[in-house]
Length: 193
Image (cartoon, rainbow, N blue to C red):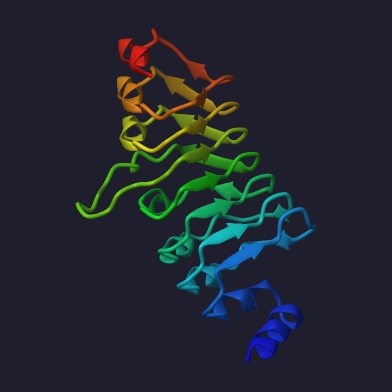
């Protein structure tokens, strides 16, 4: 069975990866893959890590990736992905590492990072959205990611003021919002960091 699945994966295309029910990790970084990310990857119920960084992938990020409820590490950085960040990804309590930097993503930074389900606990520790074309304001709901240690929104088109809610992030080690159009004063709550 394993040999058959392995041959299917190699012979057919990345689309076939979504039909491997025991798949736990996909590491295809630093290659020359092009085209879109197969939405079928969201059909892998045990998928925990997906790294497609440093390729030439285009099109949008499939919202179906949020169906992989065990996914804790998602790295799609250094591609040519476009469109907006899927809201369902920002509501995934299993994600600990989300790297989407160096793409062509546009739209707003989603304001849906808060806990929408009482029993879910957001574990996100690393969030990189830098070097894209994101606009709008910094969402206050980022201040509810209590485990966050590193966040980068640099080199975008973000404007407005810094939300005081970010001062709640007691575990934060790196905050990089450089090369944007953020104005106003630094919130007093930043003395808590």
